Length: 211
Image (tube, rainbow, N blue to C red):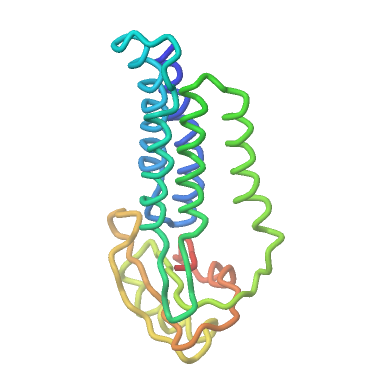
């Protein structure tokens, strides 16, 4: 039963992580799977230790698990980045880390229904509801990954037709770590309204994400 709970928590964590990785976030499949499974393990220990080792029939099953919520809060805070004076990024990923930890705790306690509903609701919120948000918003930094490092100069030239004039481009290692790929950070001198999805029209661009 414990093994089933650990595996289920890992799978649900991976599902959330896949969506975050698709968005180009640093915290991806492995991070979310480990957080969910670790939270589940903490809950299992909270239940098992008081009963088996301390002989407490009415031990507090939430004592260890309660610390997970606090600890994951610090982990999520490290994913929130403040740039260019008024551009804050990473809030959704940080919220996802906290949410997936609570999902792991629920599974550890055997509350499968709530865990499954919460996982589905999270995916709905980040994948479906995002489409209702304004496509044009103030952006300071855009990350672009291309699949051919030999096309960097060509793409940088084409970006001039898409991105506001006051910007510069930094070539960086790709987030995907895939051989042959290269990353570009497009940094605006001042945050401006821009539809980042328009950059997907350019050839060789794999994905674009606001930094």
